[in-house]
Amino acid sequence: LRATPAVLAPSGGFTAGPTRARVAVRGKSSVARGFIPSAAVSSKVFVSSKTFKTNGVGASHASSRRASSIVTHAASPAMPAPSPEPAQEEEDPYANSPRLYPNLDLDFTPKLTIPGLVSCVVVSWAAVVAYAVLYSKFHLTHYAMTFKVLILEMVSFAIVGAAVFWVVRNVLEEVQEQGRLLSAEAAGDADSLFVNVDGLNVHYKKRTAKGKDSGDKGKDNGNDTDIKIAISCVHGFGANAYSWERSALAPLAETLNAIAVAHDSPGFGLTERASDLSLYTPRTNAVIARAMLDVACADGNEVASYDDKDVPTNKTWNEAVGEMETTEGGDASLTNQSERKTRRIVIGHSMGGLAAAIAAAEGDVDDVILVAPAVIASGDVSRDASDASKKSVNPLSLIFGAVARIFRVALAFLVSPLLKFALRKLVRSVSFWRNGLARAVGASSREKMRTDTSWADGYRRPSAVLGWDTGIVRVVLAAATGGVGGVAAFFGKKSPHAETDLPANIIKALNASKARVLIVHGSEDFIVPVSNSENLAKMIPKAQLVVMPGVGHLPHEEDPRAFLEAVTKFVLQ
Image (cartoon, rainbow, N blue to C red; front, side):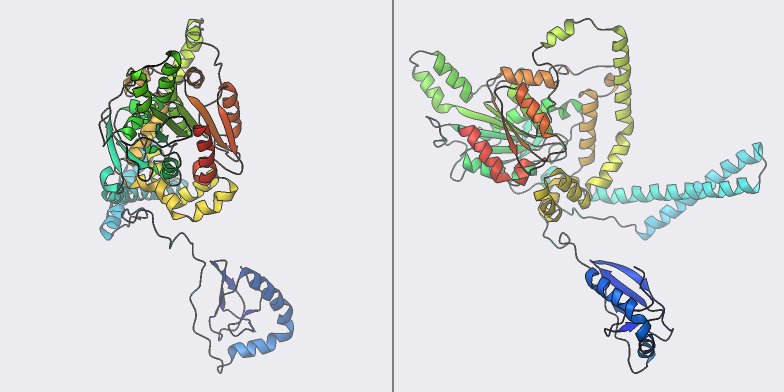
């Protein structure tokens, strides 16, 4: 702000002179320069933006008629200047809020030590000298050294030195960052659980209704007989089990008298970061989601082992009811089966909705709830996949398709180091999560998302775990290659489930399954538009669609009460 020739004095009047009047407006300070005699002392004035505007106008109008008295007052030795006061800037409420994980240094900032600074300077100067020798030798050999060439050479020296300094500094800072990272077990909570699914160590959280354990029968949930309900929750891209743990996991278990489990998908949270890219696909996540249903009902953390050919060993509610309906009169064995049946429910959010849909399409899930699902509602679900394979294909399209695939795979592997560097800069920043999550939610939840520390901390907790950045990069690579890694991806090898996992085929399999379908979507979701879920509901005739007004991409976090009401009504009807 530039002040008028007359500015506010600490005593409440006006002064004119070289005093630098420091004005704090809405927590941000700016300097207003005036014109007063050199005898005047420095003063600081702190006013709100509204007060500053009002008094500033008054100063401009009053300066002409009060100038002489003002100058005399400012220069008078009888009026000593008050001691300067520190600027009182408005504090960010997030800064002093309690942290969700006090045992993790999520706000760690690496500091460049004196030896590190010396190393940066020495290496950068060594790079400049080496570059200068090569550059000068080339120009002295091929071109005449002119003043213009000399200037360009000096500029290039400065660029090389600054670039090398920046690289070395970032390397040293990253060494500090890596030194503070913990193992998944060390970064876990007191209620963190781990289970081995096909050799992959999966982290999950488990909630049960009060007074209920995994061996108890469920109470009357609106059905004729007691049913044990198991719920497996799958989070979306960039999130972790906290997305469900925050507001939905325990209420689901309590309201439905169920056992609810939420796991960290491969590449996120505290789940192991394996080197096999096939473990980062939605199909693998679907296998884990089904395994979690068995873990939810098991006594203790038993090891689950699954592959795509496994047949479920415990009957679901739909299977038990189907057998009872097709058997005349029933018998004692069926009665015993009906007493032991379990209602298996999978809930998937965003990208996790794709895994939930695949899990339900496998046939061992009773109900699937898709929350803002990233299942693209496109394609012809009436056409069989085998019909498409029998259709004649243009050889040119095959060639162009192969070239495009090789280019996509090569690009994905080439940019992965840059992606990892960008992730390290973004994901560790609390402002990235505060602003990013605020854009993802509806207008009513935006301010809370920016100020509530638990939201951002819950999402960025995995950045304190070893290999967190590698896991996210592998998720991206798996999406680009179909889960095929190494040289095989460049030569066009496809995943055995490439055709099966196309959105149209997933929707068709979901229609053919016995699973009931509920779709929940926010009306203000701009990441996955609500129109996609509307089209998805049309492609799945048995699906029910619930649109939550004023809600964005996180219905279960923004309005957990309304979300729980929709889920409860669907499950118990």
